[in-house]
Image (cartoon, rainbow, N blue to C red):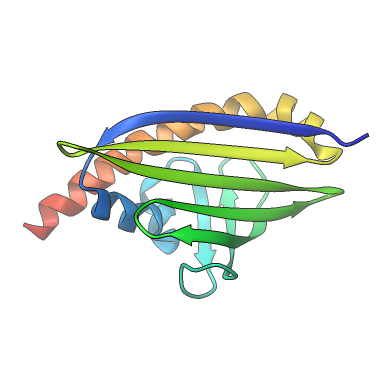
Length: 147
């Protein structure tokens, strides 16, 4: 049986799209401001094919690969799971007036999907919103430092 679990959420934050993008894709520094990340590294440029590793708070560390990048718009990644995979997509849309729409979707396939749904699903969805609030705060901090 092929299991699939998908979780998606969106919000609108304040900030300049270029700064939101630069902050969100700065993998090495993400643990300093993102309450979801305990540790992270990127093994090269932020581009398709580049590998990385991250350790979320309360979860296991995982290797992943960037699968697509559309600068200032979206990026995706994939991680291998026992018998399946976890695919994530992050979308950023400039709404004007210093507002950016953020959408995150995670799809888990394979036998791990059921466990993922019951053990991690609700917590990860809540963490999406914590991360976006922290992203907005970090963008504000970086913007003030640049002035």
